[in-house]
Image (cartoon, rainbow, N blue to C red; front, side, top):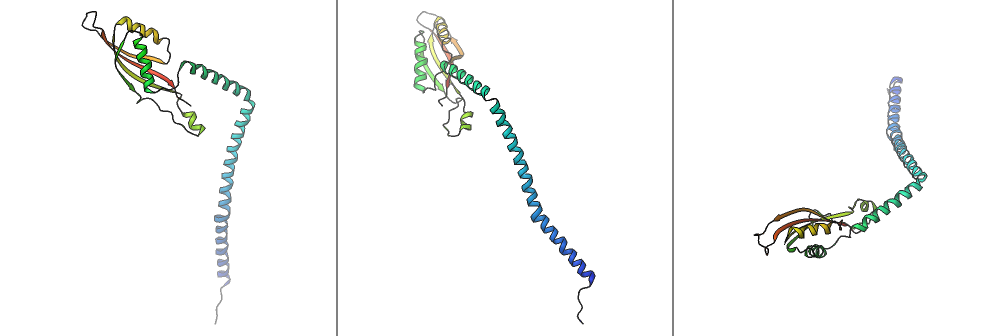
Length: 195
């Protein structure tokens, strides 16, 4: 005699099938849709914030244009006082001429670019905004001369805002008129990086 499934077994099998069907619909239908929905909500909120910022900028556009113009004017004023980044030979010539014009005789000169930040040419505007505007180059120079000549050099440096005397060391000579003192000078030259 062939025995079929009892009513109770049929109900259990049907219930198990329904549970499996609900699980599959929940796992592969509802959860992915809900995940996409929450991602879309987050993206919508981000775009709403971005829209609010753009609208605020549009409302404040005249003040932004004025601030940008003021910043460019200040930048142009700064550029008048500082030259574009120079080569070592030009730095050597400027400092040597400055010392010689004040009766100081250069004996050695050492240009140190180790702390200087070299500008990098990039295509990306964000990276350009992060480029430093100035480069400071340290130059150590040994000269022979007198204190009045050194004071004359200091007076000349007041007229050159891009050259700063960071350190001075003076050693007297033997005391006679022909032997001048030994002076160690440390200059810091500030240059604008080329854009």
